[in-house]
Length: 342
Image (tube, rainbow, N blue to C red; front, side):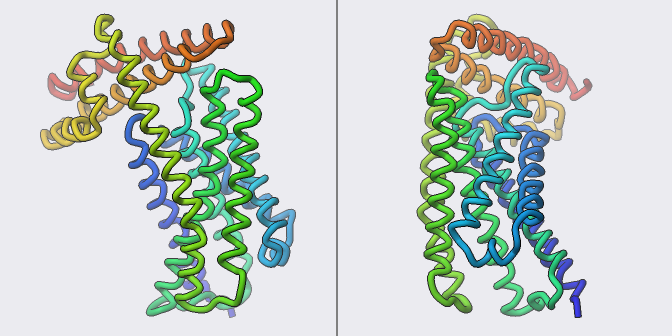
């Protein structure tokens, strides 16, 4: 008999785990946070990819043939992330600037798609199940929680590796590397997926020892993504320092703002001060202002590295659009400082 309450709990848990991971990813994106609508787009595309995979391939193949299932799932995730980046690029032409600024953005969007894939797969598996689910409560509760958390983390990591390839391609000056980097990301995700499946399911598993092997199997790809994220954040910090110094004379960035942009701690202190004074308009405006200023630094960095005249001109137009947006945000911030009235 189908345990509807148990299945409903499993589905809710999958959504909760995905939400927690998304919040962690957004927190780690310290310099320029991606908007929720774009993160949600990649999440939805990842879920759609899971639906397509489960419609086209049998659960037996996906569960019992690790290499074939890794190829299928990572290719589906690759297509979903590529579609997301293409959509964001198309939207950027309408807005005047791109939401894809480099490696860190690729990691964030790729991980979001991977979490969407894990959530979509969990929904499909639970809704298509005909037997009893794991009982809610006691050891079964914790086992279900950690298993769900592990599956979400695994897919998020594989997606982050693919997304890193697309992110790296966004700022390279080489046309060939713009094609090669996403493929390299896909191959890394495939290798990580196969290695994870082989080590995690290489022999009969049971109980907590099985979960421990699965977590250990994921340590290396997690470490790889963490290193990529730290490297990306370091590159962004260098761009902020180099590209925003001359903006002070144009009024785009003040001395105080530049110092805040160089320090995550200083920025958070400013945000908490605004929240403490209950000035929500100023808090939101300041966050948006700082975000856009970092986008300006990254866009100027891409323009400085670009050797193709046509592409450099396009990026310089993006720089001007971001400057205009900063001026508009600054007006909103000034109104917030004067009482929070827009």
